Image (tube, rainbow, N blue to C red):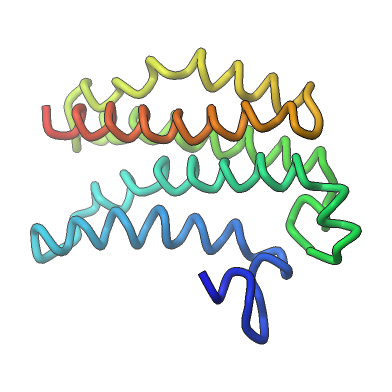
Length: 165
């Protein structure tokens, strides 16, 4: 949107894109959708928004790792430009960890049945994507970018099935 790349303080150019994506693609999207349907936001919605926002943010991280050199030359201060490529890889790992820990926490809290752990079936896929982010450079990361977007979709569908089961 306009606030992301334009305006007086573009988020993409000031290292706040990741926070924006986590907030709006995670918490606002999931909790907002829940509120519209239920007219309140239960605790489970806040927790369930974590992997959705985290994986959406992971897409941005792959993009920023891929575009690291070009962004640096253009003066675009993403978190990866600010802290280095390795920090982007670490952020991606953290986002994956948060995503896969959340269904387990939801089950252990007794807020959902064991079926909420269905997204764990995608763990081998996410590990392949992580290895690609570590090892590949440039346009080779386009596959990782697309794969992370597909992972978000699969994870979300499996988690939704698990929550309603």
